[in-house]
Image 1 (spheres, one colour):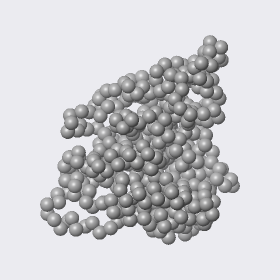
Image 2 (cartoon, one colour):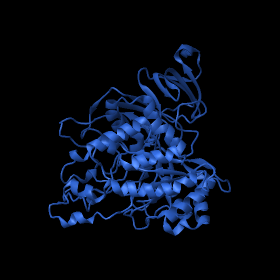
Image 3 (cartoon, helix red, strand yellow):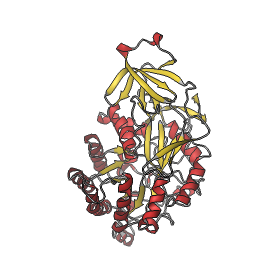
Image 4 (cartoon, helix red, strand yellow):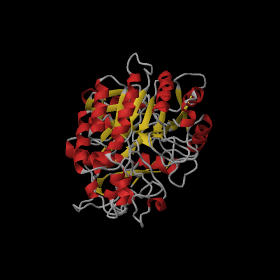
Length: 490
C-alpha cells in the first residue's frame, strides 16, 4: 500500500470564539500544509471514496474547499479551468481524523511533541488529530493550561489539531471552570475511571462524570472515558511463578472485569443523555475498548435503549493477540491490555457489524528508557503504544483479510470521528467540505523494516517486529513531509 500524497488546505488548530456558545474556529499556523501549490485544481481517479460509494471521476478544489464532484461520464478534462492532477488507479479518500492521540507537549516534548507527532500523522494519512489532555505537563484542565497547549502547537504542526480538555476532581464541580474551558475551544472532555499514571490527572468517579455531562449538554459535546475500574487483582503477586517479564502476568492485572465494571457504572449515567433526559445533548464516548465480551454487550444494550453512546477500538487490539507477545517485549504494553486471539476476532466482528463505531490510534509514546526494553518488566514499564504513522496501514493490511471495504475505512477513520468532534466541514469527500484528502495505492506492498523513515520522535513500536509466522507486516511506502507544506517522494 502506498500513501502517495496528502492534499488539502492550510493546517491549524481549533480555538473557541469568545462569547459564542458552541462555536469554534480554525486558527491557521504560519505554513500551508497542502502538498499541491494550486488555489484551484482538479484531482481525478478511478477510485474516489464518497459517502455514496466509490466512484470514478474528478474532485474540484478551490482555495481548500471541495466545490464539485463529477463522475467520469460527465468529465471532460480539457474543458475545465484549473490544474488537473490524474491519479489513475490510486484511491482518493478523506483524510483520516484521529480522535485519540497523546503528543505530550508542553512539558514532556522529549516523549513526542507537536512537530514530530503531526509529521508522523501526516506520513500515515492523518489530516487532523485531537490531542489528549494528559501526558503533557501541565495537563489541560483549565483555560490557562489550554493556552500553554496552544502556544506549543503554534511552533510547528503538519496537520490540523484539536484538543480535548480534562475532567478531573478539581474542576468537576466547578461549572464555571468547565464552561470557560469549553468556550475556549476544547472539543469535549476526557476522564479516567482508574489511576491515569499522571500525577496531575487524577481519576474521576460517577459523581464527577454526572456533573461533567450536565455541563457538556449545553455545548452538545462528548465526554470521553477511559473505562476501567481498579478491582482486586493483586493476588497474582503471591505466586512466584508469575514472572513480570511474562505478558500473561501483566494481563492478569487488568482483566476484562475492570472494563465491564467501569462500563456498567457509566451506563447508569448515560441514561441522562437520552432525549428528554437531564443531560440531553451530551454524549458519552468509550475510548480504546479491549474487552469484546460483557463490556461490548452492555454498550450494545445502551445504544438500543437510546443512550447517546459510542465506542472506539484501536488497531493494536485488532492486529495483535496475547499469545503472540514474547516475554519482555514491553513495546506491547498498553491499558487496557491486548487480549487473546478469540477476543481479537470478536472485536473485528463487532467493528464490521457496527457495534464498534470508529477507530483511533491511542498514540501514547514515551522515552525508550521508560519502556524498560532491556529489563522487560511488564509491571513497571510505561503502558502505551506508539503508533501514529502506522494505524491506517495496519487497519488496511489486516482488514482486507476480513473483507474490509474502502467505504468502511472512510467511515471508521473519517466520517464518524468528524461527527464525534462536531466538525461538519470535515470527514468526507462532499461539496462544501474542506479538501482534507489523501491518495494511496492499496496494492503496493513492501516490508516494514529499518529502511522506512519513521517520523515519531522515538521509533519504539510493536508494529516494528517479526511474528512467529515469519512474515513481516505489510505497510505503505510513503511520501515524506520534510517541512510544512513540502512533500518529497521516497
